[in-house]
Length: 183
Image (cartoon, rainbow, N blue to C red; front, side):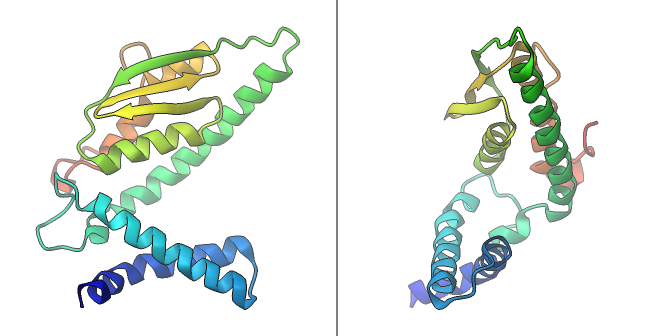
């Protein structure tokens, strides 16, 4: 009986993921549809535990997915897409430059993000941005490989501006204390 309840709670996210699967794959044969349903349900069931980790993202008793700030996420994703495009152009410039001014380095920095999901969001956002990749994440300490010195400085608040960390922190702070999004 508990398995049925878990599956019922996972269905809304699974439906969204399955719709996304269909849009991206464009395949409508039974094999691919069953693969999409299975993948969407598996991801939905597997990530539920992440949302239940302390501290609570929303009011006690609320469903974990209702605690995610979807409106704030709608502002963050276009900003992240812009950063991905900007970083793509910067990496293309560095790679196509005759002197190839690459300065690969690993940086380590700490961040005080309020939730495991916030740290996962930051790690994923860093990895999605060309020229950087998150190598390790232990508690609040990130290890990131950066292709250039500028990319490394942009991630580390003591040496750069750390805009991505501020954006992610704004996503996962309580709505009453959410100061708005950084620029």
